[in-house]
Structure formats: structure tokens, C-alpha cells
Image (cartoon, rainbow over all chains, first blue to last red; front, side, top):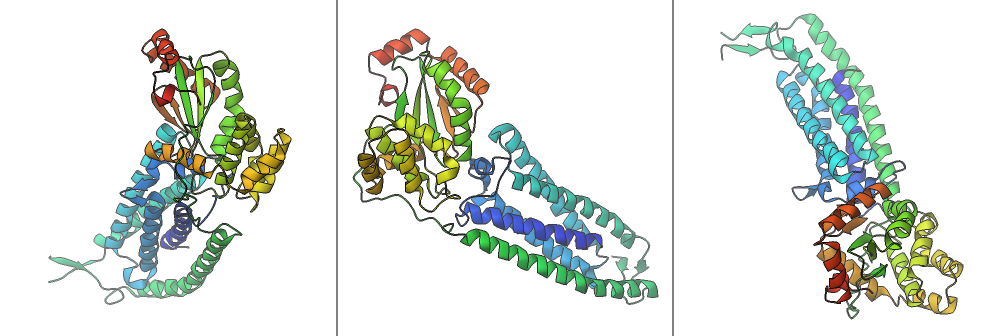
Length: 150
Length: 267
């Protein structure tokens, strides 16, 4: 499996997870499946909404974009696109920072953990690692295969 | 720009084109995998959203009821130096944890010794299907002077009447009423007629007015502490609040003078 295929799979998993928490946030799912932690306390805290939109929905949107980009990246015409790699790297880096902030809140402010959020954190970190590797793979594109336009 | 990248295939080494073609064939199997997971995931989400009685929750607030004045339920001495208020939801797991793990110590060591006065205010959250039933039942028990007994029984049996367990919580709540020795005719009638709905709404409104956004949320003295608290933390916050109270004695005098406002008034 290529790195971008791996990223597509991870993004899909993240997307489903984000949708699950979003549905919960909007009241379509009565109770979260949450056995070992305090999902409700986290999901009903004031930090579960960012710029007026639930954090879970931001997450779902992020994963949807990542899914689209990584599937695009599997197409022959983008297979070696440095630009695409860079965008995915930038997005996942932002995702890691945002997740780090959320985890900081869980640990030091809300004093509660949500296993779904930790699942998402794991996915984001894996996505970032794959994005870094993918970005390194496309590094040669900028060098070895350049031709003179003139 | 003096340089540009080659277009896919064109002008490239033959191996590169071949590799691209090969990967597009392996992509097809991968799309299938993605599609299967997506369909499976959506099916699972649909199932989760449509489990019996697990759909969107209609607002439990009845705006036609005349408003009732109520400041929750109080335990402890009116002359205690500080008051602790819990905004709780009977169906919230962390509130249940607090009630079963921390609260016995709180009552024995802090309330019974006159260090604090403890107030419970319902904050039934939309995400819990049966929590209004529980709050109404607790208020019904209060009519017979057994709020705290019912409070404890409700939390202890949370997994028997919550939205995951049943579509008919009143049946279990009535059993609990019987178990703690309530007059069952009176209690069952109160539960069936939702006689205490307005009172619970008054409590809910107190929480909304304070912009509470998590349960449980504690006010210990003047400090707000959201989330479950183990006894040691609870005790530390209480000690802090007592130390920061204007001084314990004037506070007690203020309370006994009965001029402390709503917060200092017992039920």
C-alpha cells in the first residue's frame, strides 16, 4: 500500500469518527459509546465548540479534505506532485498543532479524557508522519527530473 | 521560470510511466476497499442514530407551565462558613461517579461537621433521554422529605433507568421510590402527572442563567470547578474557600442573620 493510500484510509477512519461525534453533538445520537473515559464531559464542555462550529465538525471537515487530497494524490497525474505533498504536509501539521491544543485542554483544563478524541489524535499524528514521508519522496521531483523550459 | 516539471508520462523514462499504470490498477482494488469501509461506516452511524428511542430529542421545556421559585435542595447547617453548589444531571456518568465515590465522604466529613452546606441543583442536559424523568422523580420524593435518599438511589441505579437501559424510566424510578420507603400512591401519581416539571425547569433555568456548560459543575465558595472531583481535591478546594471567606466568623453571622440572599438561604 502506498503512503497516499494509507493516508486515504486514515482520513476515512477520521471522517467517520468526526461524523459520529458531530451527530452526537447535534443530538442525533443519545449517548456515546465511551467505556473508560469521560467523553460527555469533554464533548459538552465549552471547548467543544471552535468559532461557533463543534470541534468534531471541524475534524470531520479536515478529514474530508484530507481524504479528497490523498485520493487525488493516488491519480497518475498527481502521483509526483510536490505541491500536493506540501499542502498535505501543511494541513496535517496544522492538524497536529490543533490536536495538541485540544489534548492540552483535556489534560490541564477540563481534567477529562475522551477516547474518541484520543483516537482522532492518533490518526492525525499518523497522517502527519505519512505526509512527511510522502513529502520526502517527492523531493526528487524538484531536482532530478527538471528539464530546461528553454 | 527558467525550469518546469515534466508532464506525466510525456518525455519521461519508460519505467516511470509503467509504474504509474501499475499503480492505477492497484488503485481500483483500493477504491473498492474505501467504498466498503465508507458504506459500512455510514451504516454503523445510521444504526447508532436510529437505535430505539435514540433519535433527536425534543425540547423537554414546557413553556406553558407557570414559573416556580426553587433554589435546589440543601443539606447541612445554615451557619456553615461556605456553601457548595453542585449543578448535576442524574443521567451523567461523572455525576454518578461523584455521588457514589466522593459524596459519602463529603457528607460525613464536611457537611455533618458543619464545614459546608451542600446544595444540589438539577441541570438535565439535552443529550440524556431519561434525565428529566429522574429529576422529576427526585422532586416528587422531596415532597415527602426524601430527596437525598432518592438522589442516592437514582445515582446508584443509573444503569437501570438511563437512556441506554430503558424506554420506560418511570417504571424503574417508581421501584426506587418504593425501595426507599416512599408513600407509593402519592409518589407514583406525582411521577405520572409530571407534577414537579415546573420545579425542575426552575433549576434548569438557574444553570442556564449561570452559563453552566458541563455536569457536574461545582461552586465551592465563589470558585467554579467543572467536572468530577475526588474527595481530596474537593476537600482542598473547600479549605481554600474557607480560608478565603471574609473570615469564618462574620460569614456565619451573616448567614444566621438571614441576610445572605438566596445563596445563603436554606431550602
